[in-house]
Image (cartoon, rainbow, N blue to C red; front, side, top):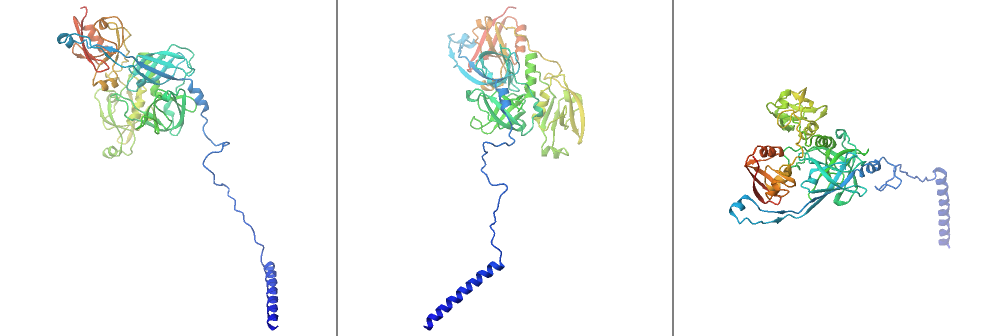
Length: 482
């Protein structure tokens, strides 16, 4: 009984204590609050939503404006039968004809229409050694093209189709192109016609050493717009749809695009095209100096206050630079107000001019800037403009100087190539189209005009020595009227 009373008493005390505790908590303490944390910038996936309205460039106008003026170029090098009909075989052999056949070769690239009457610029390596050049427009029309001229030193060529009212791309000043600026590459990669890719200008004034010509001019615009085989000769355009370059090369170990492409600046293209149209050959202007990039070593050894410009290692006597007052160890920092900080940039600026043109060159001497007026000269040391001879035949044949690519391939240093062969003494002697004449009467031939002079001054017999594109060496002898 006593035990039961104790249990009841303990329960009552516990209940009273609980009520007292609850009353005390609600009387002296605040109610709990729920805190909600909100983020002003919540985390998101990196993909853009469909209704994203950020500041991306609109490239549609540029693409539509340029795609119709970029053409697909197809070239054909015909198969030929060549005879060994040479002097040694004639004198010591059985005189038999030993024909050899070259296979038909086809290639393709791109080009840009630059005038309404059908002038098209492309790369020289696209049409080099072509017997036939076909141009396919964006609207599927096809034309045969004629080669107007080419320049191996810049890897540019000018062709023409018989057409009118063609869509054209206007040239833009490539000097104004900025790093990071958006550009489009338009062309026909892998024969996929009218293809447009986008990227930015990632560098300017690149010399990548791809051109084997000894007088090469390389000052490429580097972009990350995708360019592949077949894009060569196509357009690099800005966001206004203006031509800023001709796509020419890629940096690749696989033969396909791996990140960087290179285009010839439009300012160089425009000048080369103008020369080919007006004179038939390029008017190359020279400063007549040996130059090097300014680096830390040159700056230190010559006490230069800044690493900038192009270092003059040697001024050639009697050349344009010396006559203007430029000296050894001067540093060229600008040409006509355009800064130059590499040999490629200097070449680019000078290449825009012709022999006889005057340019203002700013040099640093004793770390002080000095402007000098320079009259540029040609490779012969004078200021004359050289015009190509007319298309008159030589004994029924037409010629062009041999390309550096053929020189390297065939292991020769000089030569002129027969591009067309009609009736005449060459054909009668058994010479075939494509033959490269290296020597005439034991005199090496490097230019068509030189070849013409030798023929003109020859009397009696002519000994012609040369090589065919397949590597076959041949000799021919024929007589001419005295």
